[in-house]
Amino acid sequence: MGKDSKPKESGGKGKGKQAASGSDENASKGKGKGGKGGDGLGTCTYVKARHILCEKQGKINEAYKKLQDGWLCNGDKVPPAEFAKIAQEYSECPSGKKGGDLGWFPRGKMAGPFQDVAFNTPVGATSAPFKSTHGYHIILSEGRKN
Image (cartoon, rainbow, N blue to C red):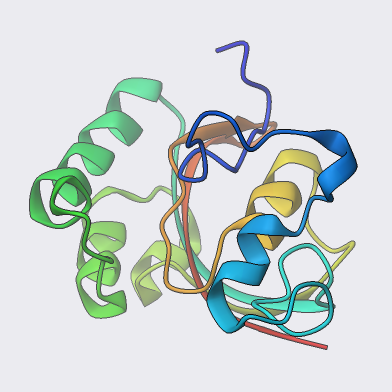
């Protein structure tokens, strides 16, 4: 595992990791206004998300493979309705019955790695599987607001 909650897996393009240039370089790509505008990564107060929770790593990897085969490997975003179907099939969380829908939640409500990934996954993007104290998760970010 060793990656401990590094949510910026899709932003790794090689050279651009200089601390002096600021951490909002991925956010500024979206709207051309770094910092306050952009997509609000890391600065919003609320996030709307769906997730899949599995106790076993093998099961979460199976769910992620379905997401990869259907959309992610082609560079497509996973439609929320399709993510919901996979959540209903694989998630062991009570929210799985609702397609993994967690609704809107504020910063500080979710524990450690879950909050880090949820608040740093761009809207419309799906996280890679990660571990928390509750098990293994995949998050689909659906919105952010202050």
